[in-house]
Length: 80
Image (cartoon, rainbow, N blue to C red; front, side, top):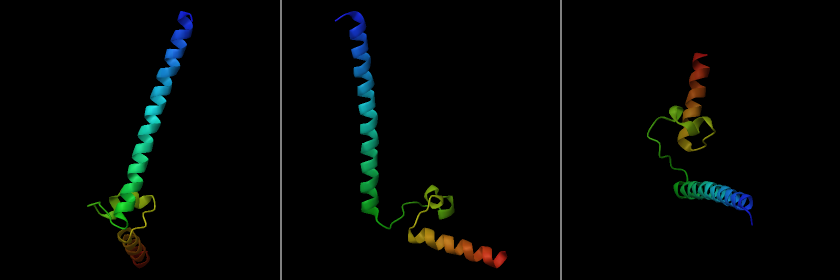
């Protein structure tokens, strides 16, 4: 093996290691979120009002969010 082959194999090893670490981290946080969602069920941990929550705009279907949406719709129809 010459010097060029060693550099290439070292580079491939490091790239594979970084890739493995990144995918492992993503997998860990993905599984963690799924478990958290299963534990919480229909509970909301946000202390803010629904309108300021990032999950609200992405289609949160918790009862608190649905109530906020229906109140918004009612106020638009009354004022609008």
